[in-house]
Length: 317
Length: 315
Image 1 (cartoon, each protein chain N blue to C red):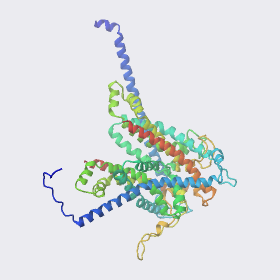
Image 2 (image 1 turned 180 degrees about the horizontal axis):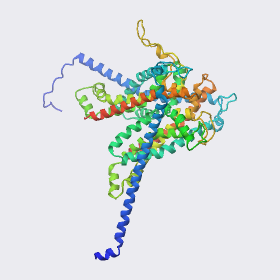
Image 3 (image 1 turned 90 degrees about the horizontal axis):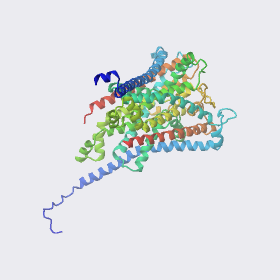
Image 4 (image 1 turned 135 degrees about the vertical axis):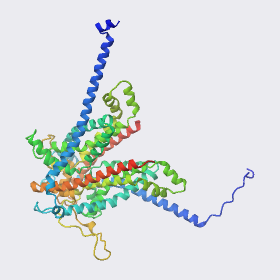
């Protein structure tokens, strides 16, 4: 019997060999595919790295204390980003103050209060759709509504509110996720000892979901700080060589809100202004401004990612 | 219906201050709910305001320019002495650049998604996902700088010596890279939500990982994956800064990637840089362009969300 098969391989062994070969080629193809996956992933990461290094090589030598503390100028070597980073900071302040309470309020409403009906669906659909509206359309909204209808002009207030609307969906979605992560028995326990809905929300849900919400807020702010298009539309692309009025004054009442009406520029707009000039010295300035901008964005995102990791690790219900 | 067999407790005298407290507490609860509701309504009002402003200003625009000329004209020169308002050059620019971007992002994003969801070890995935998130978070103005002053010169120096300084190819490629994370992470979500049992079934029949990924997981997740493509396309259409910096900003009815061109978004950005007189035709033209842009992205976004909802319901 044995000798017979070794002399002339039977049909079944040939099948077996063919099958083994097929399995082998399948495994080979699978390896090729995994390699393609690794290549694509590293390509995406390499492009990010190239963009980052290109900016760094061009811009880093230009970065100096003078660059941070000078106003923009006709002369590329004297120009700086003082007015733009101050503008960015103030616009971010308005954005945060206007968007965060509204976003968290909307998230609480949708998660904890809203009953399942067409009206809630309407709000939900709006939030999802707003997330997909191109940023420049928010600029058009701001131009028509804030600049002309409300008469806010091309001010820090207009810019802050525009970016506030822009990041609303981001912050709402992540705040809802943070609320949803709190298990139902926490709510039941609070109701069980006689808490009202708001007492339950403010004493339990908000403290427990604080980390997750903060992550969303930081991600939203990181998105806002890099936005250029909506602010170009409201007419912020101007030459600003002065600072807004100080928020703290020497005389009573020591606080002044004059600055929210001031004209402004922000980092990405200053960068756009410089990059679109043919003069290479200005493009180097653009790179230097870009380094500052990119550094801040990556810092905020990195912090948000770290925070989310910590929140997920720490929570054990 | 006779006498109650157990002693009925006589209701304690209700403390009037407690009643008052309860009343004010309920009032406060209602007030808070209203405040929270109005926060939610801000989203609705934003949508209404966007639609209203775009439609209102566009109606003003179309009283100067006929809709037919607007939609079929091939010359877009609103800032010339003798202005012409044919939107087609802006649409051709938008579509060409979006097409190039999708050509880059769809294959790469899908392969990355399949790799991360089906092949990559857990630790690698935990590292790659945040890095992809960082790519998505880079301000697009930085990518614009990269496109104009790095990618274009690099292509000119190597494989495309005839490439002009402004073109549609490079912004398309760079936008493509910038939307890879969108496709990768949304498709990965869709594939990961395919139940394990389906993979196990495939393995039990003798499939290898690749067969499982391509023939079982992918078809099951297809509506989510297509949704990712559609949402990414909407993002590419709405992208402004990369195009405004690297594509040249002159409206050009052409589908040739080597040509300079303007898109809907780039036009809006370009025109609003100058001092536009409020209410002029030029001012209104950016709202008309914005309306076309909104209609295009809205159609894509609605399709995308519809598809996403479908795969969520399936499992």
